[in-house]
Amino acid sequence: MSPMQILSLLLALSIALNVAIAAALLARSSGVGIHQAILTGAGAAATSLGIYVAAVGAYK
Image 1 (cartoon, rainbow, N blue to C red):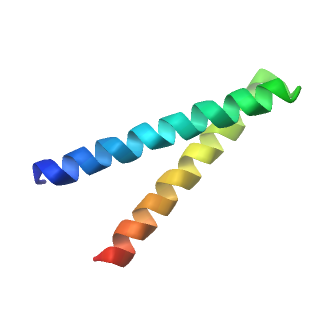
Image 2 (cartoon, rainbow, N blue to C red):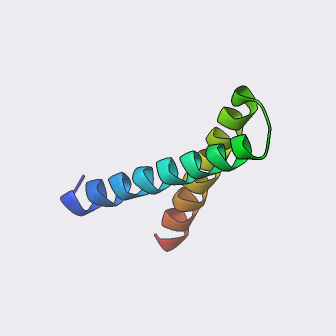
């Protein structure tokens, strides 16, 4: 892998982590339990990484 590919992958992981934390905190503040908030954050992270992979696949 080239350094640019590694950096773009790290950027995608960083964005997914930020999305997951924001979604989990938002879910937790809306009154759901901690387990449901973690699942919501994990789903948001998986979705954002899926969108990234689909965009990279469509680009090539």
